[in-house]
Image 1 (cartoon, rainbow, N blue to C red):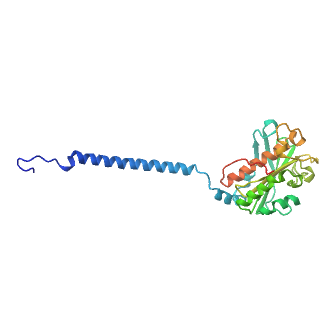
Image 2 (image 1 turned 180 degrees about the horizontal axis):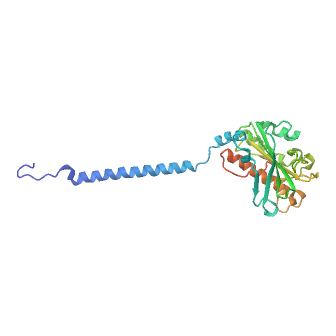
Image 3 (image 1 turned 90 degrees about the vertical axis):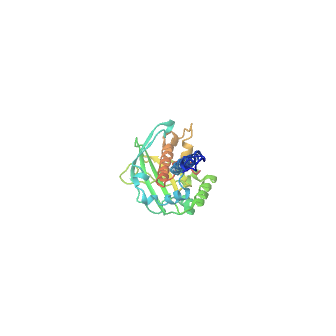
Length: 269
């Protein structure tokens, strides 16, 4: 109680200064909570949209051959929108899958020598036919033992040495019995491409030929056969586009299986 004749005193809780301080403290606390929630949201968004770790993707790339269904790596049907001559659409159907195995005897000697530095964990192959059943294409994927610098060095060697354009380094077809590719041998190769991927330990290649088994003595790399204005037989028949289009797609499928970002890899030529 106030002293007789003295000034009246307000309770502490009702003093203006105390109320102001309490309100300010609540405001600071509220802003801090909101800011913390926003920061958490930003961090979550950043993590969700973050680029996959390159080392982890590379490591997973070595395991996709046994951890991913074959229909994912080599789809039964592949649509190549705008992948044909003049931007025409192409469609390829899988007609055979080779048993996975090692690389011994899977290449001509020169190509085997060129790829030997990378080592071989596994080789996977499948053969496709186009919608008109006039061309056959074998696509292969060699899972290597090389690390990232090793794959980079191999890619540089292929690029600077123009190895991807040498006819003595053409891949071999997989000629499965009782299929349109039964006569697809060395002499029937028309166009090809070799891709040394550097973000996963995989070498992807494709080689194409005529389904009727005719021999061809002037094979041309797919990158040359798909250039605008090319008038060679591999270009006009679409066999260069077949090899390039399927190599692009299978390379993308292996990258996706490893958790990497899809992208197109140029031929190592």
